[in-house]
Image 1 (cartoon, rainbow, N blue to C red):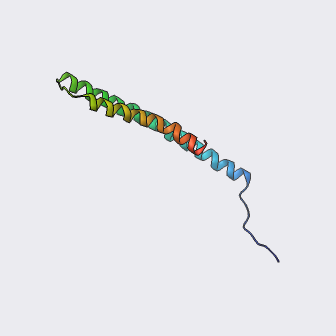
Image 2: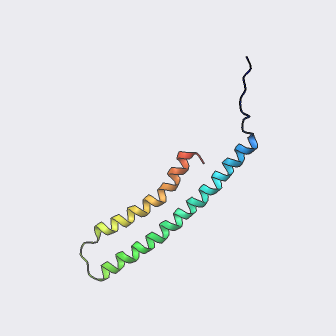
Image 3: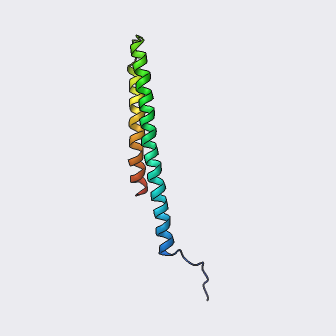
Amino acid sequence: MLAIAQPGVSDGALSQATQDLSSSFFAAFDFSLVLALILGTIGALRIYHNWQMGEKRIDAVVAAWFFAAIFMILSGPFLKALFGI
């Protein structure tokens, strides 16, 4: 009996795909850090403005912006560990 199969993927193509995934992931990771920085700055300015305008209850707003920034920062290493890059 003759078995016919498709040719396999060469090691060069597999390493090239891994390198492409790694480079695009790190670009996305850097982008997420920059986005976290921008959103954190906007949040800090909004909180400062509300505080200066005399709002009494800003604790929930502070917690929301703080944990949103922490989530953005920690999502990158989590995905990095998940995909093994």
